[in-house]
Length: 89
Image (cartoon, rainbow, N blue to C red):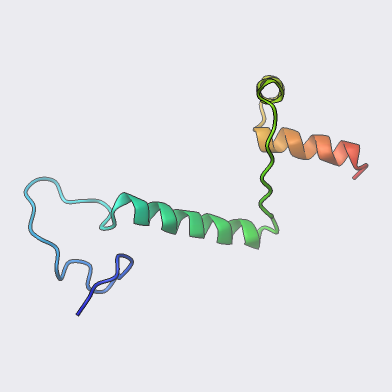
């Protein structure tokens, strides 16, 4: 009988007893990250958002960060506003 890392029903069945404070999350870090990313993707999909990966020059990123700090926005918000303005939306 094998156990999958994401298995919620037999999580402690094969776990060795360890001294110290009990873990707040029974999954190891890579599994937690994978699960959190999946939940984030589903949350974004429900909001109608799509992922877009863009490679930009470091000078442009620095300028983008400056503008984001001045406007008290995130990079993504600054890029979205710039694209809306450029595309006349």
